[in-house]
Image (cartoon, rainbow, N blue to C red; front, side, top):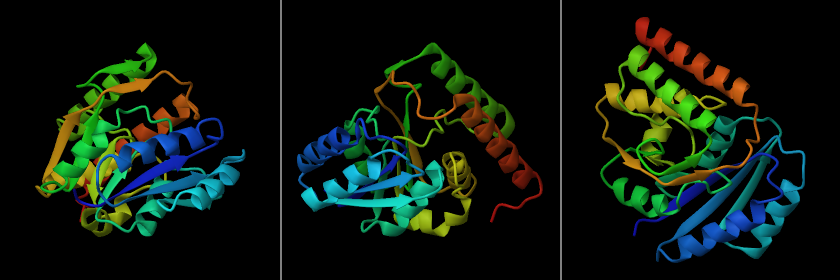
Length: 233
């Protein structure tokens, strides 16, 4: 199996961080492959840094970084720069996506630059509010950008490192980078695939969902503007 890097963003996850990383290690060990887990705290103010540094001392597979500013995209960019392997898999800290996505995504990256794990087409145990929000954003993207893909949340996505390096400037500091990279792959006919995933996401969000929604729609409008003025390189 091809070696892979797992990037895990962290924001005030002291309650689950140790358990989640140990669970990831146990699963990744079962795949009989070289791997690394890159944990990136972005703006955490709790004990996440203490726990992360302890995990590094206990497990050779774990790297831990801490940046002062909040932003999932910021954490992703830091993880990319720190990654050792060409196959990069992005997983939420709460492990809400079924971990079998890691194996499947790693296999699909042999022929694709981008693998989109999608909750809408899979089994999702989430609140009606989150389901509705995801559906509305998917319909908005389909109407405004004409793209058929349905899940643009950061978690449960995988990328070939060469693709990320080439289009690194399209990775924003927050959550629009999945939409941006999917659009780039679509218009440039770069191979990508969407696969259904099981998702159990009943935990209260670490973030303000309304503010996150505003950020996503701002990113969508920005992307459309770039499309109109032909600013996509």
